[in-house]
Image 1 (cartoon, rainbow, N blue to C red):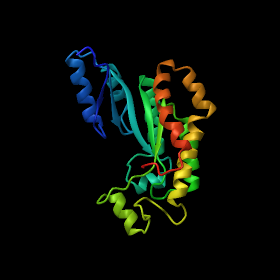
Image 2 (cartoon, rainbow, N blue to C red):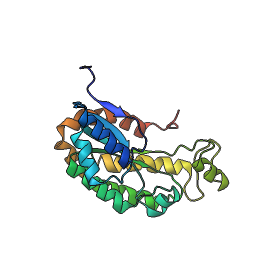
Image 3 (cartoon, rainbow, N blue to C red):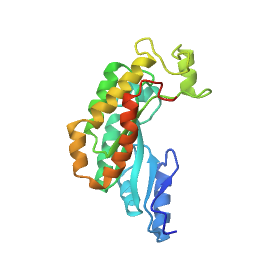
Length: 217
């Protein structure tokens, strides 16, 4: 269908084996397909290069945090060092990365949020998302918060040292520090193909920063 310009592979993890099989299938079928996907920050460089040859353009990658203790708390299974290597390998392969982070995970402090921002700025990625945690009932995250008396009356994380109100403020601070940093803006100047996507992101970014209401209302 000529009017389809790009597809998104909705696989929340897309591990090495499936990423390789998918890329090989696209190449063997001779499909001229541009596609994007979710991924974890642990794919080897060989798989990343194979994905690029198969038409992959952008990967949404869950980094979540730069603090080893937080990554351990959420059982991420990936270290900051491995995530940094993955990002550099993806760049060498010619892939775009949208780096996804969360403020307010178990173990979060003001210091870890500052470190996340400092670390994230160094990543050679095209865009970022920095979201608030959403603990759904019956999930391990929700149960952990409930068992540790870290749920507020609305069902959101609120720690003794970091209330949900502070988490929201730090979330906005993080977005401003990253998206308005000279390093990021300079990087975007040399990526005109990303300007339209950046403009669409700004349509959400600035209203969110100015909105004082609850982000999920």
